[in-house]
Amino acid sequence: MATTPFKKRFDALVKEVGFSLLQLIEQGLVRYSPHGDPTFFDTQDFPWTDLLEEHWAPIRAELDAVLSHRDALPNFQDISEDQTAITTDDNWKTFFLYGFGHKAEKNCRLVPKTTEVVERIPGMKTAFFSILAPGKHIPAHRGPYKGVMRAHLGLKVPDAKEDCRIRVGDDIRHWEEGEVLLFDDTHDHEVWNDTDETRVVLFLDVVRPFVPPVDTLNRALITLISYSPFVQNAKENQEQWAERIQAAMDEKAPVGT
Image 1 (cartoon, rainbow, N blue to C red):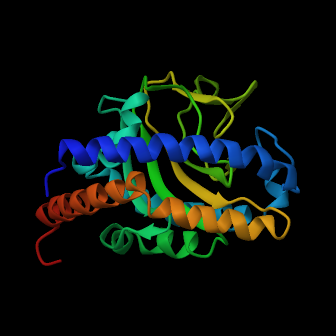
Image 2 (image 1 turned 120 degrees about the horizontal axis):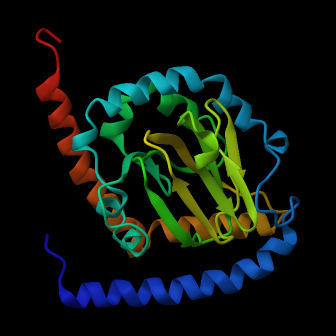
């Protein structure tokens, strides 16, 4: 169904008001975070990061199968239209498994091991392959809400690692294959892939721990966000792209499979 001008204006208003409210709320929430307000978290404080690292090889194998159909994958802004503020080209591809708690069933069936692993992570809300083409720069921006933590599992990292990097606040890191970076994306951050190779991470948002009863409030807010126009529109876009991805894979499937 086509989006009417009125619905576009309404959705934009809801997003603007909601984002402002979340920023006000999160200023109070962060005082109840047992891990403080760092740019990067210590992964040793979160045992589920070991799970990702232990299974990175089979996840990488499923990624390689997905990348063989790269031309059929959506750009990030094809799924989340708000991403046009930071990317408008074809150099940031995605393959979604979960988006704010909504499962992309068709995609998940194509990568069963990856799906099984991410579903074992307590509080996992978003999971997808984030694919950056050579030369891609994601300009400085901030995430929408401090109630989640951002995790990147390195899956395909260019040889010139220092030229493929992420800045969060004043801290700069680079990815390693099979290792997790865990950070707060509400700090100003940006990404560079100044190499001639593709960089891929398994990108996750996981519920951030808070002391009770603030933890309950945070989870309630995340549930409300999942029903916002911002998330629902992205969910609809993802479902349409999943059909295209499946069709492309079926077309290239070997005879007899």
